[in-house]
Each structure stands twice: as C-alpha cells, then as structure tokens.
Length: 187
Ligand code: ADP
Ligand code: 5GP
Image (cartoon, rainbow, N blue to C red):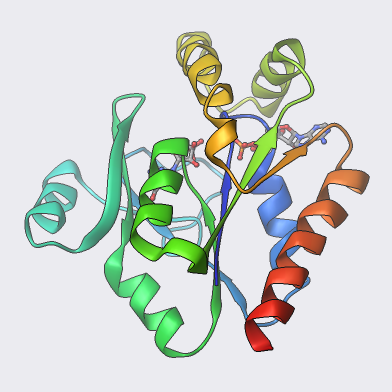
C-alpha cells in the first residue's frame, strides 16, 4: 500500500509521519529528491536526497521520477527506483508530498494509494507553526501561506481528512487509517 500524507506546509505532516513510521515495522518513508537546500536537522538520504538542479533535471529526462513538482522555486519529486524497491520487498510506503503529487500518485497506483489530507485547525495556527518552526524566512512563509489556500480547497479529492489540532488525537487517527488498510490488504 502507498499512504500519502499531504497538507499545506506547516500543518504538521512531517511530525505526524515520523510518529507513524515508528509504529509500523513494514512501513518505510518514501525519500523524495529535492533541489531545496538542506535544513540543519535534515540528513541526505533520510529526509530527502538533496540534488543539484542539473542532476534533478537529468533524472526527469531519464524517466527516473514517478512524479515531480516545482514548489516555492525548488524541484521536489518521487524517485521511481525508491518506490519500486520497497514494493518489490512487499513493504508499504508513507509519502509526505504536496497535493498535486498526491493526486498523481492516485492516478498512477489507483486503489493501492490511500490519500490522507492533514488540515491545520485554522490559517492563524498554520502561520504560527511556520513562524515557530523557524526554518523559513518571512518571504517564504508568505508564499507558503498563499499556496495553502489553494491546497485546502483540494481536500475533497482525498480519501481521508484529519485535523491536526492536537498530535495526541491526530496521530492515532492516522495510525488507525494505516492499520485498517494494511489489514485489509492482507485479507
Ligand atoms: P509540515 O511537514 O506539514 O510542513 P511540520 O511537521 O514541520 O509541518 O510542523 C510544523 C511545525 O508545527 C513544527 O514546528 C511542529 O513541531 C509543529 N506542530 C506540528 N503539529 C503540531 C500540533 N498538533 N500542535 C502544535 N504544533 C504542532
Ligand atoms: P518542504 O520544503 O517543507 O520539505 O516541502 C515543501 C513541500 O514539498 C511540502 O508540501 C512537501 O510535502 C512537498 N514535497 C516533498 N517531496 C515531494 C515530492 O516528492 N513530490 C511532490 N510533489 N511534493 C513533495
């Protein structure tokens, strides 16, 4: 199964993803490629494969990406080799990708893909979280907030929607969705 978490940046999907991954043995994180600069706490090959724009564009031309998008001036994409490797081992994947990427995964993988939309409690809370995270400049936060409006309007295309007000509630809710689909796929 392919579990896709999508949400406006700052909604808390990476935080939720980290906690969900600890709970399921056969669930791996789909490590995307990006041209965005690495944040201090991130590591190459674990959070992202950090590539130069030239290298990324070469991989697009070679057909090495399942889907890709340009977001906030950087390229982000899912590496075909990563997805194929995990699926060949009968594992499950958890994606943390944008709304357009999620819809592309659904189109490619159909019922094998489960789309989960993570909604922030409000736009004010979303801005607060982005500021508190401290990884983006004011200008970048503004761009992320503008894109958020459009992203929130796409939630109807998702299989599930989870409001991330309190992690103590949202994490078990996402875990429950993942568990039910993993169990269903084994029947
Ligand atoms: P995303 O991956 O969606 O961009 P992050 O997981 O980086 O978002 O979360 C953005 C910020 O909000 C982080 O500082 C994170 O610790 C915080 N955060 C996430 N979920 C919650 C929550 N339910 N309540 C309060 N803060 C949260
Ligand atoms: P960030 O810079 O905060 O890590 O990510 C910015 C946005 O890019 C987030 O919405 C994130 O989910 C999305 N993203 C990360 N990897 C991919 C990917 O492989 N494909 C797509 N389409 N979006 C991605």
